[in-house]
Figure (cartoon, rainbow, N blue to C red):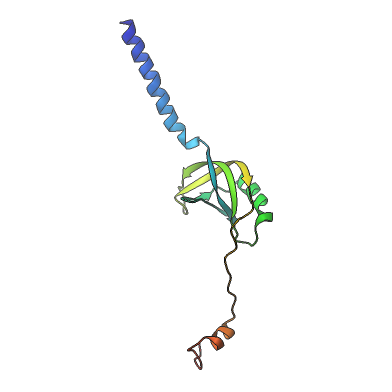
Length: 136
C-alpha cells in the first residue's frame, strides 16, 4: 500500500513538472544569430531560416545604436547575436516577433554591398537601344 501511494505521488510530481515546463516555454530565452535592422520604428532580425519582427523597446533601441556605426548605408543589415523570447505576433506584420532580453554581440557586415545602378530618365531614354525617336 505504501509503495503504490509513493508511486502515485512521484508520478504526480513528474507530470506536474512537465506541465510547468511546457507552459513556461514561451518565456524561455533563445540564442538568436541573424542580421538586424531598425527603420522607422520597425525592426527585423533575419537568420538563415527565419525572419522575426522585433518588439521595439529600450534594448531594441540600444541595439540600433550599436549597429549604426557599422552600417555602410541606411538599409544595411548588421550581424548580431542576441538572447530573446520568440512569441506569436498578435498584430500585423511578421508571424513571430522576438523580444530582446540581452545583446550578446554585434559584428561588422562581411558581405559586399549590392551593386547599384544609377540612371536618369533622360539618359536612359536617349541611350536605350531600339527606342530611338520614341517619347516615353
